[in-house]
Image (cartoon, rainbow, N blue to C red; front, side, top):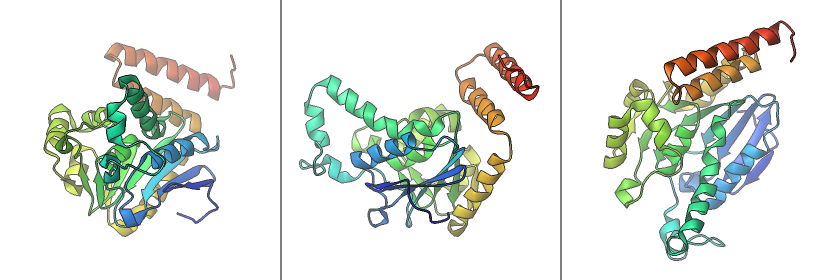
Length: 263
């Protein structure tokens, strides 16, 4: 992506904007873009400061790995500087623990806003929280060397950063359970075959493929894309008849808009 003055650059996250395309980059390749509460807060802030004319958000990681997941320092007694360790959090009141996890999840929720289409470009390792961050996006372009894995269960935990819902929707209950319960790697061929990946390309073509996809997404009128995304994102929870009704309502809005009719 074009190097631009960042809108935000802190705690391992950089946000740049070029016209209607924003790029969020994980910027700690020395640690394989390992994640921390500070990084999650920076991701949440990136979503909040996006200019209103942004239509496509590209998520990428510097270096050989997209994100190797949660920084294991979180499980040490010391934790991160200025942060309670996860062990201390676990010893506190349940309501506080629940509220803290909910705050962390905010870094993973805004990518599916109906006014945006988000694209994760994923190379190398996407482990645990890294896998879930890729799943938070609408679309995924992956490199031929990609290695997805959900290792939380192997650590005695569960995936809790919003990854379970999209994973089941993409690959089905049985495969999602097997991937998470075993912690095994999912490579590029399987990712594309099962719907985890929209496209597989050589690693050096990731940014170019994202630019091409962003351009294709921008070719359609914004309101039509917004309505279409809302239809598909809501389809999972609607019955067939409810979806028919939603389609009619959305099309009615589009036709009235094209005819210049305002309510």
